Length: 293
Image 1 (cartoon, rainbow, N blue to C red):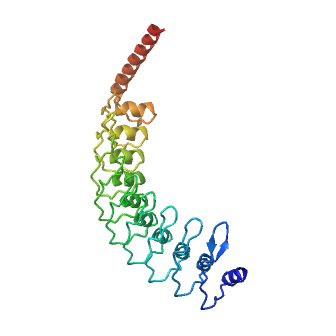
Image 2 (cartoon, rainbow, N blue to C red):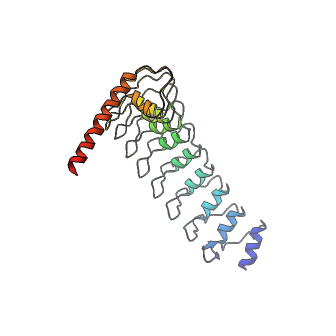
Image 3 (cartoon, one colour):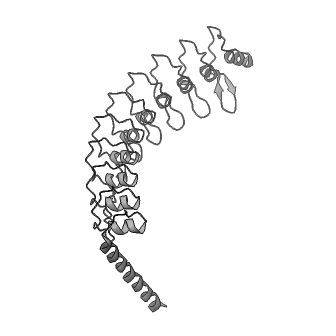
């Protein structure tokens, strides 16, 4: 009997109108039911109501149906979840099948990822979405996700939202070059003082009119200019070569050491000063080594 039902479903033929044994198992290993197979082949009847039937991984019939874009318009059991807390709503967001009036964005899986996180990842958040501070278990917000996938609205202004390590939405957008042209919160910093400007400099996404080169981190007083010099991303008209970090290294030395000095560079006194300091430091280390031996 089960074999004949499976054949009917796979041929997408209509099951008897009075069929009600949707719970019958067709795969003992996966514990897949007739209903799961029917959902996969879009053969469920219009009045089907056993969306809660689960397989071995607690994947419901509704999960299968939404994956195939086959849920009815009046479906409302969005919180049905599998063994990792992944709900039918997560599945619908992943495949872009959420209805326009969906509003249960806070439903989360076991890692704290909400439906809104998944919708942001797949760029299907509605235009009026405003729950940007919904966060997963590590503090990663929907805004972080939207910044990574370039789907923040043009009027977004909650750049200071941060995860548990202090990484803000602005940091994430700066990494991928998605900051708006009028952005000006360059000194937003994570726990070690690494600012949005540092991130933008290291990835080549600073605007052409940027001029806050002396913004520094908390640990080594390493400036944005040092980072830009390291990555060969200083503008051609840069002239603040004397900016110094905690160890006395100038921006000029940073660029010199990595072969990134411009052809018209003329501040060799800064290079000489850093070279002398390094030589003295090396001499001191050699002396200590001989003394210890």
